[in-house]
Image 1 (cartoon, rainbow, N blue to C red):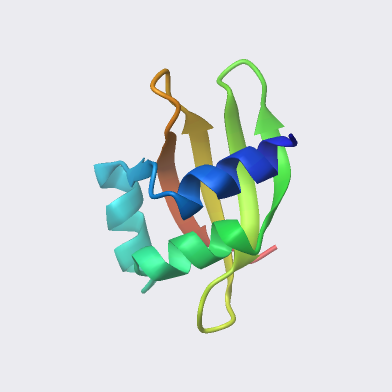
Image 2 (image 1 turned 180 degrees about the horizontal axis):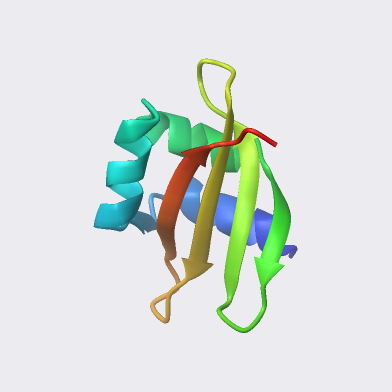
Length: 89
């Protein structure tokens, strides 16, 4: 299974959490948890940081804006979302 499919499956089952930083950044850009979920479920991996095991997923929020989510897998097989931001690339 591809990494994006693994991430999306865990999101669908609710096996994820946002760090405090990710939650704060989402609020700054006027995103909520549903935007984050939709961004991942509609998204694709744009970048990876192999050493850190992190992935940048770019998708669409519920209101149609581009959203970027940086996440990683935890040892307990969950997705840890470390930051969220409006994608302006």
